[in-house]
Amino acid sequence: MDYSSSSSSQLDSGRREEYIDQVKQQLAVAQAQELLQRMSDKCFKKCVTKPGSSLDNSEQKCIAMCMDRYMDTMNIVARTYSSRLQQEMSRMGS
Amino acid sequence: IFQMEVQKAKLQAQMNKVNELCWDTCVFKMKDKMDSRTESCISYCVERYIDTSLLIQNRFQQMLSKQMH
Image 1 (cartoon, one colour):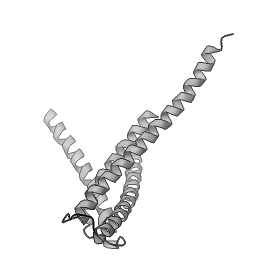
Image 2 (cartoon, one colour):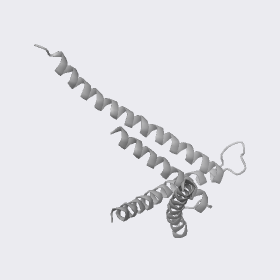
Image 3 (tube, one colour):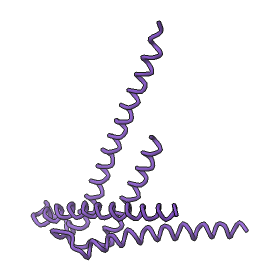
Image 4 (cartoon, helix red, strand yellow):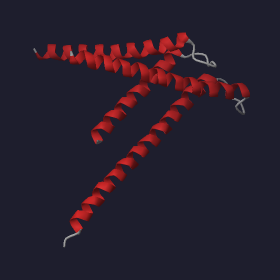
């Protein structure tokens, strides 16, 4: 009996799913890192105008608020973008 | 599946760019909360960016097709 071909195709599809999950995870990690990078840039520009020997309290508060506002911005952009996309797609359909 | 993920990643990358652009354009002071003026600036910003990009695509296509005739 030839078990090898059937068992290897099961392995392939299981491995394939694992691979896809891994790639998705890596993508997510990379995207999170990019987000942190962008937030660091933006919040540094907004909050640390005169670099000193440490981050003082007001700078730290500013950075925390900046992160919150940046993520609020992401929500607004995502909402606006997706509703606009829906509009464009329904327009193309008609 | 791969194609879908590529599309998703492209869309995400474009949204990130728009995010940066509209942040620079609309957000000046760091506050406790988003105020409504900033919120509307951001959503107008996204819409006008998309309009700009569509306008440029269309006009460019027109320019190309003029050259070919």
